[in-house]
Image (cartoon, rainbow, N blue to C red; front, top):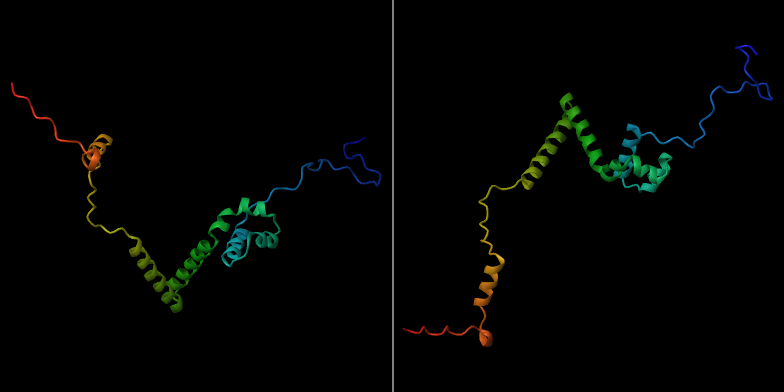
Length: 156
């Protein structure tokens, strides 16, 4: 056989030079487009099973590759929309500017609500140790089991 002649099968087709991969289906590759789609679907109230069926993945694969979008879908979409609003506002769109100002005021109000007030720190009562607590409890005993008067001292 010459170098150009490769062995052929029964139909006259040449054998492939590289054997096909014997393993199963290739693993899923995460993409930004699918991640955004998962976040939008989750934010609009779709279940994990519905999202998996729509995208064409199994539910475990969906949870494996898109767990962040499934957990925080609505927050991620809100952030993306806020970015778009601010881009439009900086571009000169008046409606977007008004909405951006409303969002800024809302953010400022939330920030103030969660800000810690610089009040005086509360003075914590001094904590007693175990022995001191037991001694104080023993001194408070009243009734039949209360300690009597100590004996008088004898004079020499």
